[in-house]
Image (cartoon, rainbow over all chains, first blue to last red; front, side):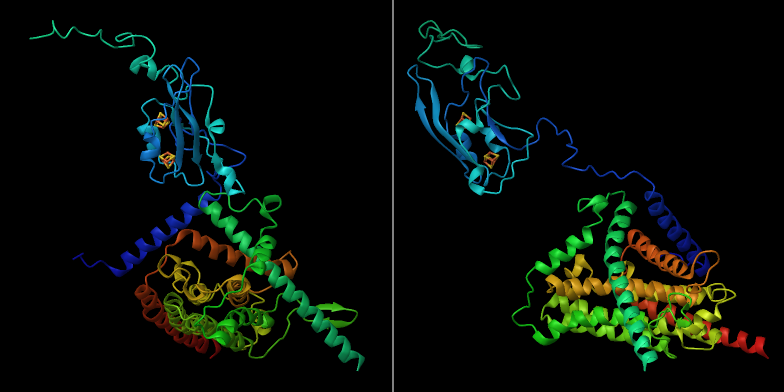
Length: 184
Length: 331
Ligand code: SF4
Ligand code: SF4
């Protein structure tokens, strides 16, 4: 138990604290408010903040997306849908790609799942619309002409398209070994 | 006959001006409170509606008027619909006895700047503030909702407790002034305001007045983080607006009562009486807002403790001491 204090001393202390509290708030009256008036002032957001989604291109200008459906599968609210196709050279792409931003919760899981860095979230958050259907974004709306956060990465240089080039011709890929001479 | 008719007209005019003035004051008090509170918390406050947010009360009024006026299905309809009016009306009616300026003389006619100089004005004010409790308690009860009921019960308990110290704190003032009339009380302070001789009374009255207006250290009846919105949880639209209006009018009225009883009413050097009165009321109101920006809410037992074990005995003691001193001085 707390030792019993003199009532007057306690009252005096309480009064002091009261005065201190009132003084603190009074001084606040003359301080500049810390409010950022939003539509006039946009706070610069960190590069990795999660808002509107884009589909990026690789350094050669090709679409990065290989329509692997991983983003669509991982999306907790199932707001990504697409149709995969193949070009003549065997490279896969999405013939259409749709994100329903009315449903997206901006969790960023699609970006994490994407093996090609194609789908990326950007700090651009002002996406409000009066008509909810205008929030459905098609591939044309999503595709941009740059590489987003990692401009140099090119998935195909690493993984390759089987139809183009031979084995062992891709970046960081070892030459194929001769299985006959590879015995221990 | 003509004298009677002009008297009537003047009274009506006065009534209209006071009513409109009071309502405008209350409306802009909401804005002032939000602005000041924001600055006390280093924020900006409302600044979008009109220049500096000056049209905010208008926008609020339009919003409240156009909202749907809901009543819960199982509510006691009649009482539910009447309760907000009780709060707002009693608050407005109290102001009738408050003198807000020196008598004017226009064309040989004396026009007292008070709506009604009742000889029991003080009792009238206390009685009306007691009726205001009914608005809170009935509003909470008739909503048929647990939060509202709890808020109503708290409101009734709190306001009844603090009314006691509110009334007791005024007894020394009545003893000093020798009258229940607010005009006489102001007249009795022609040499010095009662604040100087009755600081304890002033303190008790002020604390009780804040409790009567259900403002922050004592806002248990609405306690938004425990009771959603307390007694007005179920109210919407203009009925909620009436509760709100009542609260702010009560704030002005309590401010003017403090000014009348302890700060010398409209008396003051250099400036015109009306301005003095206004300044004093605003001063008290500013302090209430400042308090709201500074103090946390009391717990329920602390509230009752403060009221019954501290304020009431102190007020009683104050009465006895004042009486003894007065007796000694006059003997
Ligand atoms: S951010 Fe989340 S919710 Fe939005 S599309 Fe990607 S995975 Fe789906
Ligand atoms: S955006 Fe990425 S994860 Fe989604 S389908 Fe295209 S490549 Fe696969």
